[in-house]
Length: 342
Image: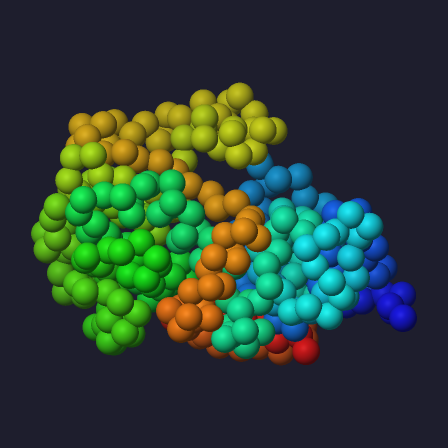
């Protein structure tokens, strides 16, 4: 029998981890197409502290207490009347929808966002996969990288949450012939173990002077304009960190106002003009939740072709969640920050 309430981490107002609290909420009742997941582990991503700090309030209408967390690994607790893909007791993982709320004992999301957990991964490892892995995986599909005659790929910050997955997907799923990244000296062996073939120590060298003639890149650091200089004409660049165009933001967040849209178009214009001059195909990018993509990613994990680097694991207590948020916001993590619920 389901409990009447459950515990969840939430923000009482926009701000830093001092605004976090553990709240009691009514037990979730799944809509027809939803699955309620009993959370074993969740992970944090930069979007979590950015949203908590109010950086997305122009795009997403928040209410308080504001639940947090997008990534989850757990077991199916209950299903809605129209759910056909999952049954109670199955181990699953997901990047849920924009309601957020995986740093909790239970969370509900649509079945389309969910996939079976890879058997090769623990719940803690699986929780570290969804958002970052989807962010790395989907641009490869959009770029047609696998069909290129030459497949040289660049991603800066290869030891970060997205970078570590991008390197592995380039090697194991998209047949890259050369994979370049940037890290500090202490992390060179880590990214080489993941599959990087060329590593630039960003503290000693400038990748723009070391690399050339690449076919595609994923900008994880906001250096898109600098990346253009190492690419071939016709190369593809997807950026998750540079200022997006207002037109693109409006396609993702339809409620975007006219003035904000025009302001973003103006702010992003220099990068778009530079891309045009360099004759590269440049796009801003936001990942989309996809159980189907997670199923494909899970196959790589079960084939031994996907490693999940875990920076730290924190308990599901107020102090533990605060420490996890502070570590994520510091930008000093190598790999994923995990909150273990059970």
